[in-house]
Amino acid sequence: MIACIGAGVIGGGWAAYFLAQGHDVVAWDPGPDAEARLRRIVEAARPALNSLGLPDDGWGSLTVAGSLAAAVQDADFVQESAPEDLELKRSLLADLAAATGPDTIVASSTSGFPMTDMAVRAVDASRLVVGHPFNPPYLIPLVEVVGGEATAPAVVKGAADFYRSIGKSVIEMDHEVPGFVANRLQEALWREALHMVANGDATVEQIDASITEGPGLRWPVHGPCRTFHLAGGEGGMAHMLDHFGPSLQAPWTRLGAPSLTPELRDAMVDGTATDRSFAELVAERDRAVIAIRRAVEDARRG
Image 1 (tube, rainbow, N blue to C red):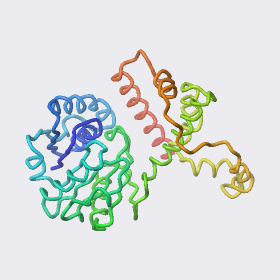
Image 2 (tube, rainbow, N blue to C red):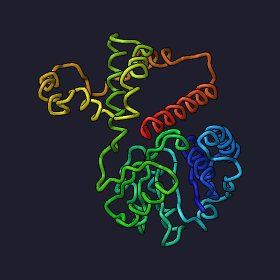
Image 3 (cartoon, rainbow, N blue to C red):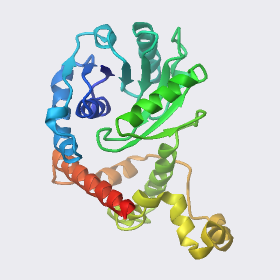
Image 4 (cartoon, helix red, strand yellow):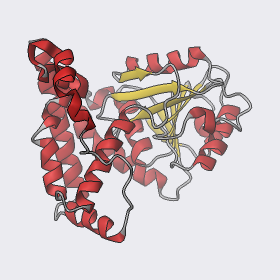
């Protein structure tokens, strides 16, 4: 049985995925409307998961517990998805470490905090590990797994093996990296986008199109490094670096974070405004990601 602690967008997405993989899930969230919100998230994810070949008749059961202790008392694996608040994470992970059995792995969905910083209040931090997903967890395969200084190596491996067993693509880190891997890469792109809007270099619409109609089409297949390897022709990455290396010194990028002025905030909000509902956009995204995943899988099979 899997316990999902926190039932927001991430926790609910995890619950939907675990259920679709046939696991029984017990969830807990202190919010007054947590159960209704969780069930809405699960039901909204169901069509996408069905489309991925996970029919309703193979799903596990969902229970919402009245307390944290009740949620985790029989858990084999715990996925914590509380808000990104360091003090909250510290207290919650300490409680989870104390309330779970000696063989239960407790994984945090944190998107930024290292486990070493979050585990400081846990009496036994050896079973605490980061299992960082990407939104939505029921659809995006990637999970970054990394332990803290006190995490047992067997726990890191155990968490990684568990995620792989349910169809996740795992980056198993051997040490903590500030901001993790994928977040740092997408943060660099995000900062550049904010700078270009702030400086009037490009609109939000132009920036989004530059990715969806450009390099974004290549990244599901090869990623940024292999993409540049192919850009070097038959000479590969070596030719790419030798030929274009000097341009790396060109003052194109502004990787420092721009000031989030009211004007920049308004420009970003206005640029992403739409008459379409949140549910419509989520459904479109899910259909598109499924189609892309299927197309990439077909291409790799030849």
